[in-house]
Amino acid sequence: MDAITNVCEYESLAKEKLTKMVYDYFASGAEDQWTLAENRNAFSRILFRPRILIDVSKIDITTSVLGFNISMPIMIAPTAMQKMAHPQGEYATARAASAAGTIMTLSSWSTSSVEEVASTGPGIRFFQLYVYKDRNVVTQLVKRAERAGFKAIALTVDTPRLGRRESDIKNRFVLPSYLTLKNFQGLDLGKMDKSNDSGLASYVAGQIDRALSWKDVKWLQTITSLPILVKGVLTAEDARLAVQAGVAGIIVSNHGARQLDYVPATISALEEVVKAAQGRIPVFLDGGVRRGTDVFKALALGASGIFIGRPVVFSLAVDGEAGVKKVLQMLRDEFELTMALSGCRSLKEITRNHIVTDWDAPHSLPAPRL
Ligand code: FNR
Image 1: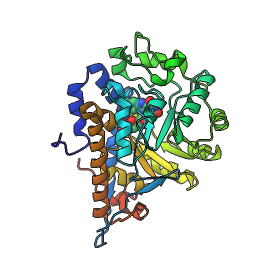
Image 2 (image 1 turned 180 degrees about the vertical axis):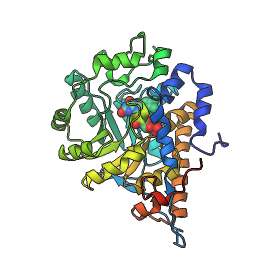
Image 3 (image 1 turned 60 degrees about the vertical axis):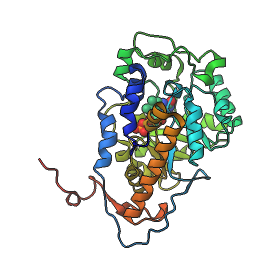
Image 4 (image 1 turned 90 degrees about the horizontal axis):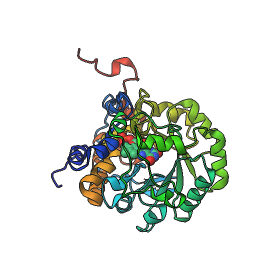
């Protein structure tokens, strides 16, 4: 594994190791997968304006998120069913995150329970919540996460129904029978039935509440004292509503391009959300982050930190805990190097002037070659 020099290399190695059904589930986006490609492409349309002759012999990339000190602004997004990638699944991810001094977000649909993940040892962890129609299920789960020491709830708001992921439909994707959605095992909701299309889409249609609205955010605030992050905001309008609802933060996310196709790349939507939040609550981003330069670009556009999704499942598939550790280390090193080469010694020195985007003044980017 020493030969691996960047995060993207894990994907092809994972593809060789995993079954087609599992690889496709991890890799795919919705419908035409336009947004999936755009999540990456949009980063490549943002260029640097580096500053020179600044003493960069000392660089500090530490930060704090919701008051928790972490070693870098790079965190782990919730991805479901990690034991399909590796037998250690979420345990390995939790250990790797904690060793790297950063935050892991555990999916509601994990194949290890909140208690099991907590038992791996100390670490700052957030819990991602899907709201089930049965609110007793939600209340119990939130309370369990709280008791297990999770520090925040990331409420996913972009999934009233599951996006149309065509390979999952073709493969009749279903959670392998030796695994369960561990958090729901005792509630008789831990198994996924085979269906004529995606088993996950059917599960969502049966269990997840399509009626979820801002009222429920208020309700969630009454059942937990944990800070709530709203995951899946893409517009200024919703950012303003999130601030009004009194949430602790926003995650600009398009669910790794797995929900509504033809939404913009998250890096393209970030700035309008940041402006609408007016510094009242922190704004984070996930989607397509694969390089330290991507992390820098997100911070220059006002993000307080970023989360990675697929790089975790692919590195987990290839090399378990060591793989996830390596992904986090490579991103950390690349990000620190980007800071040095653009003349920034701390996160607060990263400014909007360190980058130029294709929506800035038209003359500032070279015209595309036809
Ligand atoms: C996800 N994502 C996700 N989000 C969520 O809120 N709950 C979940 O259970 C999952 N599960 C999940 C599984 C897989 C295989 C993927 C790829 C994604 C979305 C995830 O949290 C995040 O928004 C994206 O993965 C970020 O994009 P990248 O880094 O994968 O490009």
